[in-house]
Length: 361
Ligand code: NAI
Ligand code: MG
Image 1 (spheres, rainbow, N blue to C red):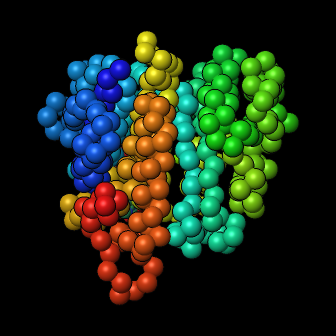
Image 2: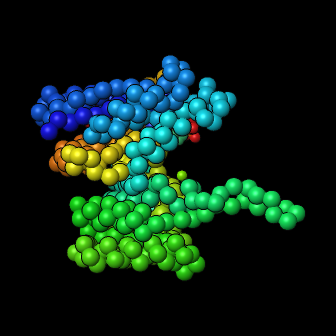
Image 3: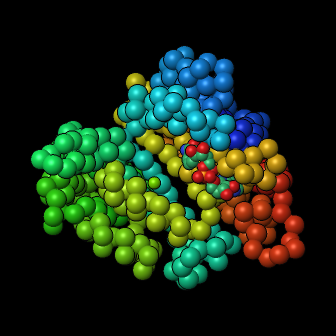
């Protein structure tokens, strides 16, 4: 099977961090015999500048064909005044929507060398390795009716939390499959105490578990208590599965347990394609960082770790993914730091490519 990859560097630091990933992809081809058929295209402001839209139709079509899309970041002050319909983030939203990427995977992993960056105590976070699976294409951000309506003598703002059984079923399966490749434990979070969608969520997750994943340990937790537990003792979790709204909040909380935006990867997965691989988009959590763009200061680790996720979840090369993650861990343990990972005054940070060099070495 060939390994096809579409690279969309985007705006700001996107192309800078993606350049380091490209070097790593070349290394895997030359040194490990792991070849990728790579194409590169524009997204976000970069696409708007050339095509007048943040994602061209031909790029969208290519994204639907490839095994994995790897995206840098989109946006920047230059595009802030644009009409919403052509804003850079619309390119990303179009990719997510048309590829129907319903499972958003946000790992929160705390490398020991960076444990002091967390807002929590070292003991609580060192060695942390959890995965939040957020439902991404339904729920209160999309449910109808929605809008601001006139009602009697004042206005009312309405959003609707709505989940079908099949939407819950498929994201639950994604979480159980992941758990089997990790610590074999899933905690499902909702608010079944006060929400109908929460009652259905809990019932469907339990049913999927009992029918097809009885070997995975399943627990249920109210999402508010889950937020508390994430801050109290996050290492109790392995995989957390939750809806779009709660997942938005909980994954941001979990991100801060690890302390550094420059280290956080993500994946968004959809249904399997004809070759059995899921539709997939990989991207760092951070944005285009206009404040440091063009200065060679950006930390490429989040983008590199996103590529490691692609190796694991799209190309079934968990062994090589682990190799890459261990290289990042080793470099950090050796004290190599980009500026965003510096605490001591007076120490010298490495550049974006300096970090790439160290990881390659
Ligand atoms: P941001 O993530 O771009 O930056 C926040 C802060 O973190 C900045 O101080 C930045 O320098 C720093 N930072 C981020 N990534 C870093 C890295 N890899 N290495 C070192 N430092 C890093 O978020 P912000 O400033 O809110 O947004 C900037 C632009 O990015 C906006 O146009 C926004 O819309 C866009 N954005 C795009 C996202 C995406 O493409 N998925 C996600 C978030 C924001
Ligand atoms: Mg958020």
